[in-house]
Length: 160
Image (cartoon, rainbow, N blue to C red; front, side, top):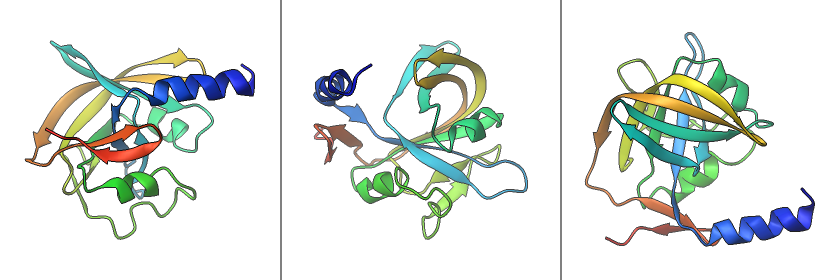
């Protein structure tokens, strides 16, 4: 796709508000890693499935495919700085000074998130320059916090 078409498509899609998440995992014996993802949605209630789309040329792509488990932290309205941090380079120090805990299978979940889910990878499908990762939700939690949205190139608080 030429750059002008890509830019116009990005502008069109920027008019659709999305939630903001951090997808994170931790291989045994290693440090946690994660990245900001707004291509996230529920797929099925029975069984409970979600999907995340991960850019193939990103540093976290292969790491995610190498794990069995990952967590999705749905960021709260106050967590725009965390969204920025987990979308920037370098990837190595994203968890530095960020409060988090482990879900049941050891996946990192960010403290103060609006909600979180821990998932096992069920399927990976090609999706152009991204991989579509289907996760089976094995555990979850929520808080009373409002969600962070991304709209027209900016982070915004969801108004409920």
